[in-house]
Amino acid sequence: MRIERENGGLVLSEIEHFSLYDTLECGQCFRWEAQDGGYCGIAGRRVLRLKELSGGKIWVNGMEEEEFRGIWARYFDLDRDYGAIRREFSALHPLLAEAQEEAGGIRILRQDSWEALCSFIISANNHIPRIKEIIRRLCREFGEKLEADAYAFPSPAVLAGQTVETLAPIRCGFRAKYLLDAAQKVASGQLNLEEVAALPLPEARARLMSVYGVGEKVAECVLLFGMGRLEAFPMDVWMKRVMRTHFSGKGAEFFGEHAGLANQYLFFYSRNHQLKDDGTFTRKV
DNA sequence: GTCCAGGGTCAAG
DNA sequence: CTTGACCATGGA
Image (cartoon, rainbow, N blue to C red; front, side, top):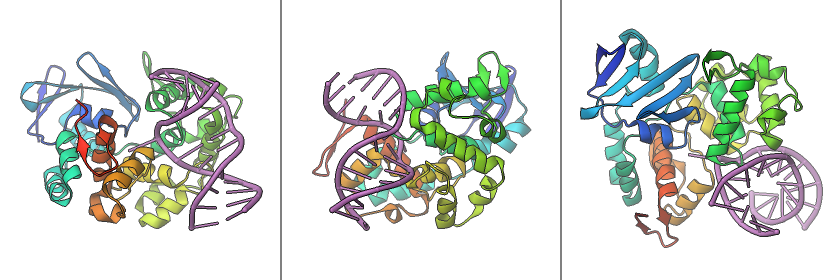
């Protein structure tokens, strides 16, 4: 990856297997929006704007090279060799070969673990556009204001001080009590997310599931999208459908140590295509 | 009106 | 261990 200063920001080049659309619209994150030809998103206490230029280059708004390499390359998982993983996937299964080809620009984001925990609690039995709206209201109500119409994700302490009643404006329904339990456990130190991130997968999973409202699927999402654990494998209704129709009898182990990335390729693919029960697949135009 | 959504909990079989 | 009601909300 090359980085040059330009136009009050940085221009990244020589990056393969990375597209803003695939990475930011594949359902792993909820705080990014398409905005004048690029994307605007909030991570930590930073408002990031990115835009794809010609020749595979990407422009990022004002920061120094050190900050990008030190923080955001990790956030976007740009130092991992996705080419090697994609080649393995291609040889593994025809549908996965097709899926990784079509969504080849996906990078698994390393989002903040606390934000990921709350986000995927909210995701339970919910639609992606509505998840985004609920999170937007949550940040607007309880998060620190960063710029006009841009708010940081609220801290565990602030959320722990809320009640089901004060969370009502968020309109997250039955999930409010889940958020409160997560906030209380994290704010009190009873659940240390940094420690959990380093635990062996079964133990990490179990620790996350100690939160009321966190089951297997949400735990896997937090591990994959908020803790950089690429072996985690979330099974939502879409993935269950793919596994039933095309990977009968197989589980996460079939995909190896980067199963979570295979999961994401297949999840994104399945939402954009009609999958048939006979194991075939056709483009949805 | 009915069905569905990046589900989880709880009680009952 | 599996099944089903129930949970809030809003779009299709």
